[in-house]
Image (cartoon, rainbow, N blue to C red; front, top):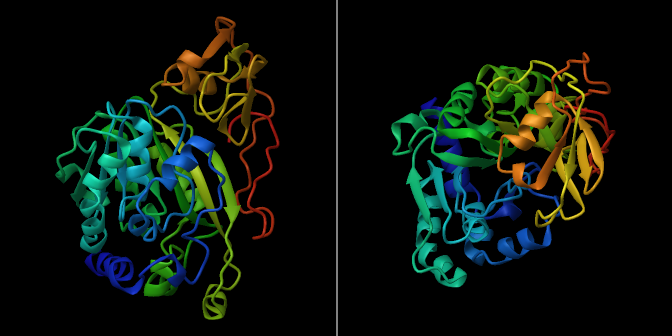
Length: 355
C-alpha cells in the first residue's frame, strides 16, 4: 500500500508539472459544462487550473448551500469552482495526500474568496488518504455531496473508499464522481507499472467489480451519468496494454434506504417543473433518464426515490400513489460504457430505465 501511494505522490507531485505531461487522455475532460459551471471553472486561478488531472465533469446540479467533500482534490480546481457554485452559505472540503498539490491549493484560498466576494474562504483542505477517511476530522453523515475526479482508481483499497463515502453522506446525499474503468481485471504485472498506475490505467477497477463494490457499500442502485472510451497516446503503453479497453465514467451513487435490488414498476410518473440552472428544459438524472419539463415521465420506484427523497424534490411533481406493484419496470438496461470508438465523446441515450 505505501509503495503504491509513494508512486502516486511522486507522479503527481514531481513527475507531472501540468496536463501536457500526460501520456494518455485518461486524466483529461471532454465534457461540455453548463454555462454557469463554465463560468465557475473559468474563475479558478490559472496556477490551480494548470494542475488539473480529472477525467470528467464531477460537478452536478442544484448546489446552492450544500456541504461538499472532494476526495483527491489535488490543487483544488473543482473545490474552488464548487466554492463559487455553493455560494457563501455552502462549504467545500478537499482531501488529498500530496503535499505539492495541497500547497498550491492552500496558497490560493484567500485569492478565490476575494474573487467570489466572500468575507472569508468557504473552503478547507486536509491532508489524508482516502482509504482512511475515518481518521480525519470529518463528521459522519454530514455531507450533502461528495465528489471525486479520476482519483479512486489510484487508491489501494477501493471498497473502503466507497464504504467511508457512504458513512460520511447524509441520507439522500450522493457520491458524484468521475473515474476510469477497464473491461477486464488488470493483470498483476501491469498493476505494478508506475507509469500505467500514475496515468490512471492500471489501477482502474473492472466495471463489473465496481458495480458489485458500490452495492456492497450501501449504494443499491448505481447510475451512469456519462461515459467515453479512452485513447492511449503513447505507443509503448499501447503495446503493454494490448486488448484491454478503458472508459471514463461519471456516476452517481445516492445514499437511500429501502431501494429495490432491481427496477420495479409501481405505476408512477413524475413531471419536471423546470427551474434547475443549466437544465431548464431537460433534467438529466443519468444516461437513461432525460426528463423534459412539463412531460409526464414514467419512473420505477428507485428513480422516484432518487428524485423525491433528495435535493431534487422541489422541482418535481408525482403522478400515482404507488400502492400497486405491476412487476418489473419495462426497458431497464444499463449502458455499455466501453461501446464505440475512442473518438466518440458523447454517449448514446437509448431510453428506458435504470443504468
